[in-house]
Image 1 (cartoon, rainbow, N blue to C red):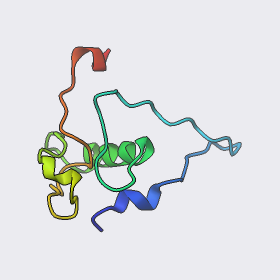
Image 2 (cartoon, rainbow, N blue to C red; image 1 turned 90 degrees about the vertical axis):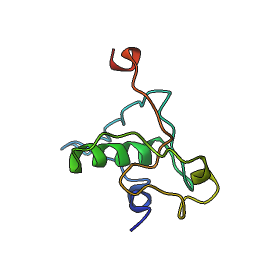
Image 3 (cartoon, rainbow, N blue to C red; image 1 turned 45 degrees about the horizontal axis):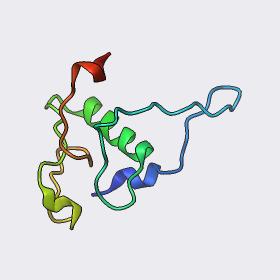
Amino acid sequence: QLFWEKRLQGLSASDVSEQIIKSMELPKGLQGVGPGNNDDTLLSAVASALHTSSAPITGQHSAAVEKNPAVWLNTSQPLCKAFIVTDDDIR
């Protein structure tokens, strides 16, 4: 499925006492692309890409992905704009 992350939208993790675990805060330079993406969807996509591939994560390099993500999508990369990790992001 091309936009598999959408299936996870609105779901949250919880601990054994059924308290919802707060989601991570992503760096400001990491921005999602595609229809209806939010930070939780982007976090799922990036975490999955880190877990399932040994290739570097660079994001979507084509500017046309904003117009029609189903056509201009690099399926080996998560649905985010191209980004560079800085030293401040690591800190």
